[in-house]
Image (cartoon, rainbow, N blue to C red; front, side, top):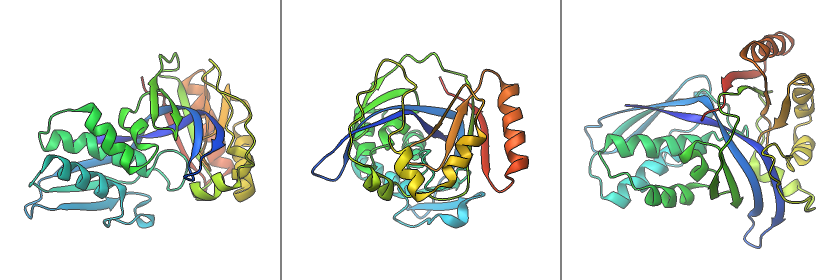
Length: 270
């Protein structure tokens, strides 16, 4: 069996405040590309969960018990009392610490995949609770459709988006940007709520630039697109285009000018 861990982008990310527990109060719009990491699963005779990581970014990721895929699998097993094991292969195609879901998308894909593989009942409420325990972005990645997120980002409201199948280009300068330091560098100013327009601002862009100034170069390279933003806490930026041809021309131009950057040409999911 196979499942895609769809790359996440934030069409808007408004930081409204810092909570006493250390989390931040957000208003965000999650959207997802049609492509991402790839997970496959096979029976594991030993009755345990085994994770193997392959792909372009495999060397940067642990396959141990701290991996969110393993944690998701163990949480699902524990809730349902599953005795069967699973050998999961994660083809890691998305860069790490990149603001596009990464481990959260992998964990969510593992929950979807193992629910089918182990023949478990599809219980959206239970899956949401498990996803929420794994990280603030995991519930949105579990749905992998355009949703509005509030609270920590895990209080979700579905959105009827008109952006489905819009060509999108993701660009990462191959500089990891951990989420924690970016949120810590936020200046604490509430710049207002998210309006009806899905394409809002990203309040983490300025603090991310203090950590990774190269993000400004990525945004500059995307100039000319219909809409361009940094995603999440960076360093990945994305742009939306009117046609596949415009997107592909931009990807070719950026790849020539910056051959060391990572790019992904895709479309937004329905």
